[in-house]
Length: 332
Image (cartoon, rainbow, N blue to C red; front, top):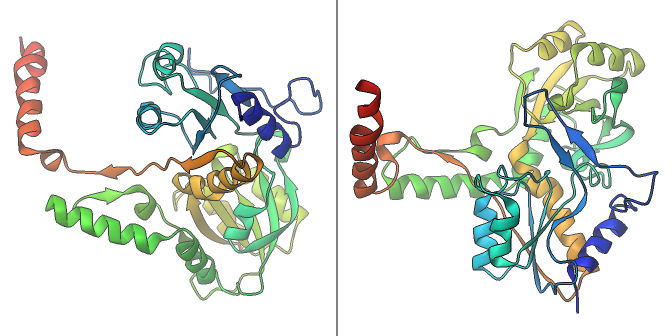
């Protein structure tokens, strides 16, 4: 019989002991705090809530825990959710307390974020290069990840990177799903996150040759000063590859790359990390816990014009509530 405790042990094993608090070499309990009052959260790998002795027959891997995941898990017989991103009271449970919400279904939740990062070279591989230098706190900034890589033999032009991502991420299928949704809703204005945020070339062209890439993740704090430092440290770099987070074409980072004579390409966005990191984690857990059914919870976020959202009856309801109870108070 597999228990929640066995899941914790599996996470500890696959992370090389990073879930074990007794190992001082792997302290991955980290406060995440941007200085916004009352919003910091402690990221702590392992079990967040649940009975460690409870049996686990079905386990879900998710990126960011929300009430959607909790309700889906409860309705489909899931015993535990392993979330990649940090879990926080209310923020991860529809505004209510985790303990009470999860207790209703006896659901256990676990997290494995920074403790999972760096365990496999998959993100670099998906973007078409092999890492030859890595730093997870570049410039002394904790979590500021930097890769220096040489492209794989089949990658000779910048366009090949985008084509590779398009194929691996199944964006053609996502496009077909969106096409069907637009037809059903009778709206050409519906947009979907993975498609509107797909990779693009900012400096250079599809035909521009590429060999040595500097793979960065701008949201971790990578700055123009870091870029100058990296170029001095690795003068052979010809292309900046940014993934997870996006940068504007007029950003200081892009302008600095231009001054340094570097090309700039944007790869996968954060919403695709369920495939980059979530899927390898799910396969690893399936192999370590062979008697447990493993499923993957994937978010799909769409943008729909207000006047086209929902059924005709729910739109009428929403406008009636707004007119009679919300806007009416403002105009009194």
